[in-house]
Length: 80
Image (cartoon, rainbow, N blue to C red; front, side, top):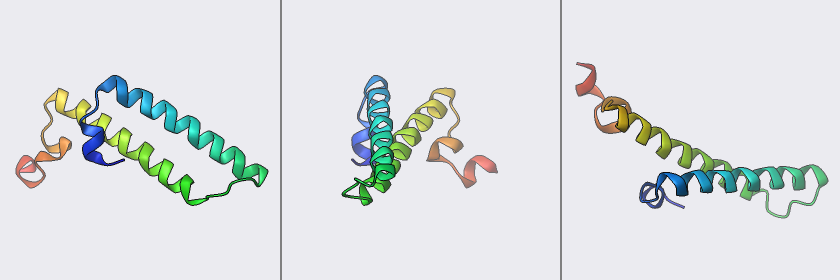
């Protein structure tokens, strides 16, 4: 899953994706506690995917408010 893919999705799709990823993370943690996790790297990938979804949601929230600097389009110019 890439940032570009996520930015192309609707808000409802992002919400569903986030819920699915959180459920998967819960299941992976449960498998870890039970000693049955076959691919521990999957934990890292799911956590990062969750962070990507949350980042896209936050960017949209800031863009809707009209805050160009916080949405990643400004930086130095917005502070000056």
